[in-house]
Image 1 (cartoon, one colour):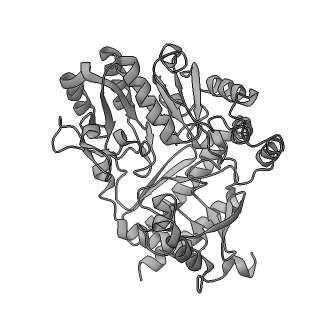
Image 2: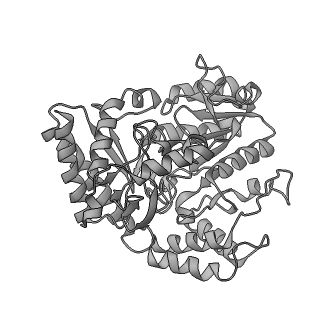
Length: 439
């Protein structure tokens, strides 16, 4: 490790860049969590990345556990992904017309996720979920949707909604600029609460167009749905003619080759994908049963379009990534490394944390760390985690060159490049971090 790798964070280029950014960009960032408002301090401005590492504007190296929030599953700047992008770039950046690459991407997605018979490519996860909702409403002729508190499905108006004041009241906007008229069509329930789901369907089942859920949530930290919860959701949707949407923008190809739906053995009607399928470039998708997808224009009356949808350079990165993750043993190794990290951290907290409540969980290449005694099961129990302790831990790890998600309520990600040496370096830093927290 070079001197620049361990340089202290003083008179930082990151500070200079952040001050400059705030003059022309709201909050100095183009996505809110990057601003470090939740944890305090100055965000790191990244200049390059390779394998399990990235470097900031002070040329300080970090072991990266966000991986561009999921896409970097094969590691940053993988040679085969870079080569695929380079080959695509020289042919042109965008055409606004169909390409064979779009067909290849669609064929690969349909092959790997059997519930998807047809798929439409878009450029962001928000576009994918927003379009999936519109499709469900168009196909059913109904307006109401069900979502679950703590699940984030992008920043479309109908989805920026929190729970109402009672079990069967419709939601309230969580963002300025979202009309009450949008929120009144969104029923927000508790994650993993099967009884509440039953009651909602009993009251509104014939008015509900769709249920949208993260089967493995990643934006209230990592949180697993119970199998019973998802099985009952599938049963109720079938019974009432409601479209079941799995938002696998984060979990798709992250927790298993076929996504969370493969782990649970549950078939949704529509799936939203993103992140991994772009390999680091902007690609997302929504797809499902062919009879539903035929409602999309130009075949049907549900309109969706995008100038850069299926961008040839982005598709090249995504296709290369999808091929790499199909290597024999890829997910077994990824899951083992992620579990090794989490189990190691839990053991350190037990031995070095002097009673600091701490636990962790992992699914495939995703993990969650919680400053609480028991694994959270819903938004309410997640909010009971000790945010102050997390912030102390975050900064102690950052000082040691370990970059975790800058929020107590975001999942972490491991790549195929996080080998035993990387995990051990992280655990060594964690021992020091817990010791600092006890001073």
